[in-house]
Amino acid sequence: MSRATPATRMLDTAKVAYRLHTYDYDPEAANVGLQAAAALGIEPARMLKTLMVELDGKPACAVLPVDHELSLKKLAAALGGKHAAMLPVPTAERITGYHVGGISPFGQKKRVPVVLEHSALAHATVYCNGGQRGLQLELDPRVFAQVLGAKVVEVVAAG
Image 1 (cartoon, helix red, strand yellow):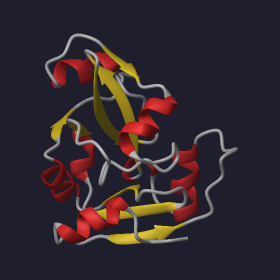
Image 2 (tube, one colour):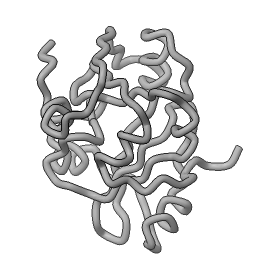
Image 3 (cartoon, rainbow, N blue to C red):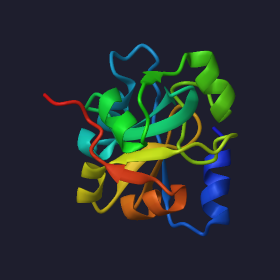
């Protein structure tokens, strides 16, 4: 597995401290994020998933813990939009340059607005995809938000 991805190159260029972790990606897992957390032995609240959405016809990115669902309504409100929906897989892959299961919020082909779930800031470090299946980045969530210019708000669905 190559450890050089657009995500790692972006972080290296920005001189951001991070750690890489590899694990055996299971495409058959009921929840690949929970599977990644279990494989790396970390609590699910620290493992973040990257979801690509369409907000009023334009792409955006939501990053939240793998054990929660995204509230499209909260996301739209956070970014000042009216309607949000998940992007179709081919569109998400084209915009990001990554394959689903390996989409990182870092180093995407097209820069889009990013929202980070505020609960991520409760941890010293969090994990997110490093740009390929089976590769996770570990970094400070405050640095994460700063590098991406992410809006840090609550975007998880209630319940």
